[in-house]
Image (cartoon, chains in turn blue, brown):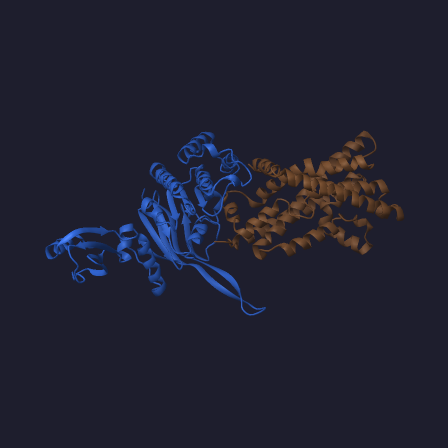
Length: 329
Length: 269
């Protein structure tokens, strides 16, 4: 399980964008979609890959799948160069682009699977086993004979995920697999992904805007902004890195001036209620003890930080400082 | 695998029945319009371009039949490739462990198979009922040889047509909006392919130009083979020219494809 599967070293990708400059002239401008990426992914890991729009997430996935050629740097998947060995590596990779489909639009879902069987030369036994499993877990049975264009977004996405897994890929790239899905569909997709990762050891790299995906699925998260990795580590470390805060909500027996307690600050005051923010890494216990000693308390609760806020703060900071790569275990 | 792609493509085209029949109808109506134009023209100039009247009328109906089959005047299945390049969906295709040129050839062959059964046969049958069309003539051997040569010429014509359209679609990687290129391609291929009028009707210099271009291998050559316009050596020569163009253009397609894949920009993120 310790084998490195994906290696990315100093990878950049720049595009030339032409924009209008005056009536007839057009200016050429080089945009660095990815500006020096470094990371590795080990076999069996499930990694969340997040960042704001235009951060370079999709570009990274396209380079890893061999669709785009990096401008500079070194990129290896299972020891091979994805662009040069595209056809051979494709046998070992699965990909789901949330906003595009690999399915045949005008034909029943089943036809696309049959075709995948031929494209990837999947042995009959493996094909039947994998298809049955996907059909069961993703609840595809009633959809198999429906033309893909008549499927809803959530149904199509489930169909696409199944299509990406029929050939037993070692690594699965998911580019926003839950985009536009309702809560039930999202949960079904997440449960399925967690299961194939646990049971088959499929390595998963997941880009998303939905942080619940990450919280429920990934033990490791990489945050990318302006084409660089600005955070790489566990979810808890993300809170530290993002200097996130927990909140003590205190209901006093009678109104009082803002509470002064070291290590906290009052962020809100409303009658007998006060909101005290403190670093997420600090323990709430001594604070509660001290509060109880000094004030008459009617009620008290602790609110966990919203991961959205943490990430938002991190994006903002990266923008201001264009920070160097931070690595937190 | 490519056979499976071809079959699915055939099925895909067969899902749009109304579009098919609309096209059959249009092709047939235009067949009548062109026939009466040709009749008027050949009345004034009998044996124009080396065709007698019945050969000329047959030429019209072959044209109406092959229009959709060989995708003269449109990109055929490659219209999909072009849309996919413009929308960025081509990323999905590039990910598959397949050769793009062969993949799309299989898709286009499926399309052609469907067109053969609908858009090619129906207008020709209608034309055959309304006018006297010239079928291969002569001894039994001649007739069989002509049909065999016609089938070969059609297969090669489809390959040349495909190779040309593949090149046109690939320019999408650089240009994105292909309407201009397409229009130029349609007009050039119809005109120099002998689709409007046989190129033998052109002034000598223009005919020489047409003979030096590949478009003639798409349309006029199979039509002439069917009309027994050539002797045996001429037929073999014509098939050879088609084969030559197919090899050259498919090779060029591979070259452009390898360049295109390296500079691919996926539209829409």
